[in-house]
Length: 334
Image (tube, rainbow, N blue to C red; front, side, top):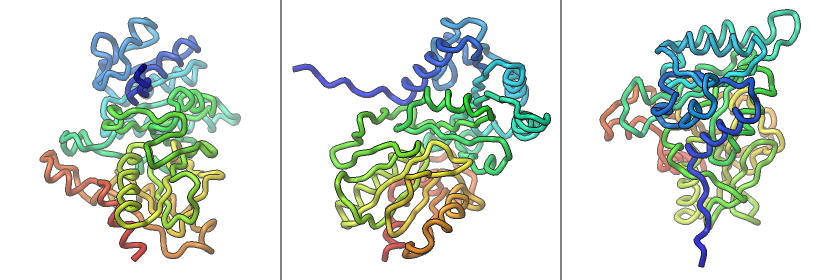
């Protein structure tokens, strides 16, 4: 009997997507520190690209501002650029290039100017990398006019995500949870024996098939999806609480389209630290739409207001886990 074909790991999927995008469009360039073979980047996402595509894939000096500025220049000149930041913590070093050059260049010349630039940033903790290599800084880039904030997910096709970002003509930051790299993509609408998913207006909706009347809708970006699923499973099997999960790939501008929450309560979970969070932006967008039927205010779950320790037991205290989400939902529904 033939063994079923296993889905790609997220890292394999993203690597293949980059190969496909470069093969399909000779104007695409990839820049980043140590991305050329044989190293292929700190997480091997760019493996094989420089051997196949030559000078269109370049390792660069350690200067995040210079790399992003060069990528934006390529985009402004009519090509397309994908820039890899080795750890998302260091994308702050390119904040000026993103906010004052790339984002503004799309609109400040008196006419729309395409800016096909994607800046990839491996983010998140749970690896013991400590305060300067474990952050999820997505919230710091919300609300910049002209700048899109995206997040890799195990539900969304990465090639489509990159090509859609180019087609939008505005620069985009793509955050990629480092732990997610080791997970496998979901496919064919199946999550596991319990949950199924569908894509609705670009948002993955995960639920128990054929069941209505959800107690809670959990909204979580890509890297949080597996922890949210674990929480949903425990809530259903141990507490008889039925949840659905919405996983958007675009964090900003935020729009769920037709994938509005169906639960009588909404919980937003994210890896960023407490205070001025992405979840607060989501709640602001959803309140005018859901106000008449929400049982209580939207619950926001985030990491603690803290740096991220390197010691595993202390890191565990700061970051969000499945149990954090489970307890937050139970408290809200009590």
